[in-house]
Image (tube, rainbow, N blue to C red):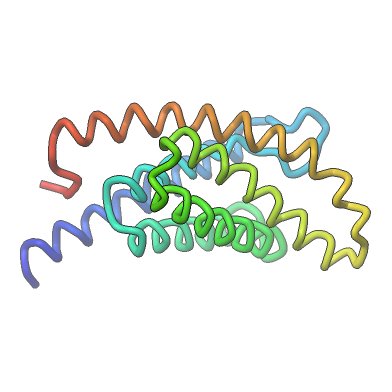
Length: 171
């Protein structure tokens, strides 16, 4: 195996492990304020950083593997499906927003947090066979926006520090 492939594999492994660790940490934080489905989304920090410092394929891989591992370890199959749909929809929108070069990582993250919650609401509407759950979206939209901005600020700092080093791969 080439040294560059080993570095890439090492970096992907570390990013997945970090995202999984953040998911675990998030599962320990009681952050719901009586509203089900609310999370800080700190594992998404890793995906945003990967989107800006690696390539989109690797960032998507990190996102999917993290969601699957977290679902198996912490939440179960139904929550995993909600997270997977929300995560995929969020990733597609974040990728398009990043590609447009019109939003900073903060804006991309805010958009991602909002779209992730929208994707989960859509899944819930289909599963529950009622679209009345859409009325819950404004609350989740605000939470997704706020947590997305906070995560985006942290991701932006990390991305800038990585850019200063000029290397995103394991040494």
